[in-house]
Amino acid sequence: MTFALSSEHETFRRSVREFAEAEVAPHVAKWDKDHFFPVDLIKKMGDLGLFGLTAPEEYGGADGDFTSLCVAIEELGRVDQSVGVTLEAAVGLGINPILTFGTPEQKDKWLPDLVAGRALAGFGLTEPGAGSDAGATKTKAVLDGDEWIINGSKQFITNSGSEITSLVTVTARTGTRDDGRPELSTLILPAGTPGFIVEPAYDKLGWHISDTHPLSFVDARIPADHLLGERGRGYAQFLATLDDGRVAIAALAVGCIQACLDLCVQYAGERTTFGVPIGSKQGVAFQIADLAVMAQAGRALTYQAASMRDAGASHAEFKQAAAMAKLYTSESAVTATRIATQVFGGYGFMEEYPVARFYRDAKILEIGEGTSEVQRMLIARSLGLPVE
Image (cartoon, rainbow, N blue to C red; front, side, top):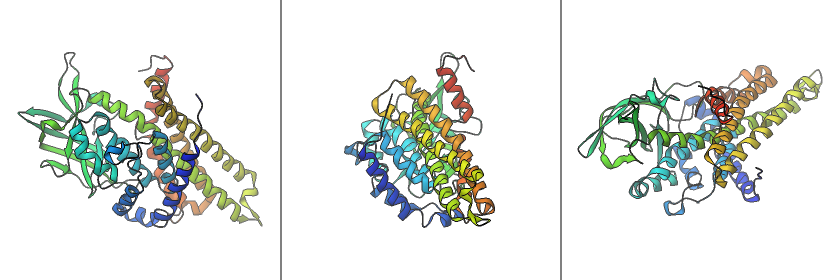
């Protein structure tokens, strides 16, 4: 399957790049240092239409394609990874579950503000003992008359505790299947629900601008109609959500690689040693050449997967393409930041230079939305191997 970004996509890329360089780049170093979540920036992103790229017009969206969302994530991630993942999570993990599985009433209630960037939503899947192993989920939801009572906890939840967070969708055990496996369902927990506790934000290695919290539920009660989708289909819902998310994370990783390439090309042309630019040295030039290859290869894998999603490829084909894109780009991004830091030498170790921030931010790309090990397992299975 072949693909090419359209002229409209490239025009859109330029507009997002201009926005990122004008509204993000001048402030990002201070935001990162202060661990500051810029709500005003989120609203500006909403005004630009970034949160509504894939949403229908009836909810205020652009009714656009998935490829456009990936372009926006890449360009924001090229300036700052935290801002890029805020968009990725807001759409892929916040809006999409409601858009895909919600009732008309749920969509009418929640989507307009989410699509406009006036509100954010989180996706509560991971727990202290359950992540990729969703069957180990301990959070429980019991139906009591016309209400669900939820008890449990979640961790590493993005966009879950900001001042504009309106809800978190939560996977929970709602019963036991005939074969003894847990019945998992998804529920909508509005922010401010009594018993829904947003714990203090994490002190993270990277993604300092991103809003990330552990969550606790102590007899949190919500109406019965806050069930999202069919009861017992929570596992299938989160798998579908993660497939899209892996391609979006790949786009974020491509932005990271491109940033390293751009920074290194500029620095290697300006920095001199022994009277010549360091870019004239093969030891430096060849490493930067490798960055260019990573950027091109990662971009090809990512947008091939995105185009498959837009074209309605089979689930099996898309799942494999998403895993391949996520695996290659995330591991390449980690390598790219290491190379960039080395090219910058001692300056690369200083927080005043952006390569240090990209270095800290990159590692999580190999973990979130499914670890590299999970991606290799999915790819191996797609090849017919009986891997456990």
